[in-house]
Length: 291
Image 1 (tube, rainbow, N blue to C red):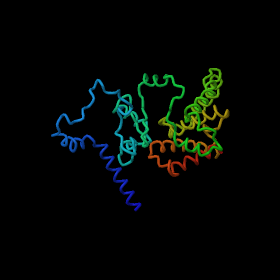
Image 2 (cartoon, rainbow, N blue to C red):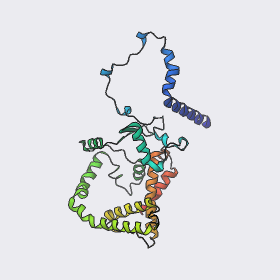
Image 3 (cartoon, rainbow, N blue to C red):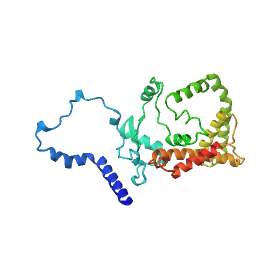
Image 4 (cartoon, rainbow, N blue to C red):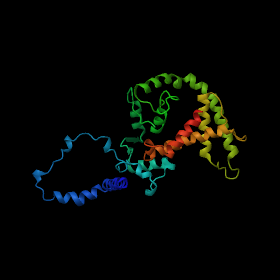
């Protein structure tokens, strides 16, 4: 019985996907012939163009939406269209295909609008709103809400409404004060100097190519964040000395966080219903960083 239900659901999903992708073809083959001999007065008439309502968010161009998948199907392996490891190429291609405003849809049918023009970005950022809505990173929200013993909130990046406004108000003076920012400059300059020395030590003397540059850039960002947030150097950029095991574990955990967040965002979202590998890896990394 269970297998029969699963097969029926799979068949319904396949039919829905086919109809969504080939809706124009289906309309031409099956619907137009039905209306061919229909009296004109019996046909539903569309509203004149001048009386139609303004276009909404679902009219924004973007990849074809599929039920239960949204537009995430473009990342699936069997379509061989895009790679999650090269997201910058994905969104550059979407910009070329669909223009400066592109619609992406989550499997939960939540629309995400991507803006490419500077003028449009300025309009959104300058729009007066006390409680602006920003789609949260759902896997972070779910994990932190499951651990109230550790987290009083889900963080300023993921909070919404009055809680977000309260966190932002308390932090704004600290992160925008010119005097405080000026005090950070010497520490950040030291981090940048160490990063340059690390690149010099790691580059090939014959080709001047730096192997694993992305990994080194991630370490530089991590060192800078820890310097600002913790007020101390962690040693991620040590050129010759071997890093302590805890430092290496912390760097690996931070990297795993970003990988898990990417996989949770561009995947099917099954981690919301049971602890998938993506969620377990994320929780393990969070635990390691917290401890």
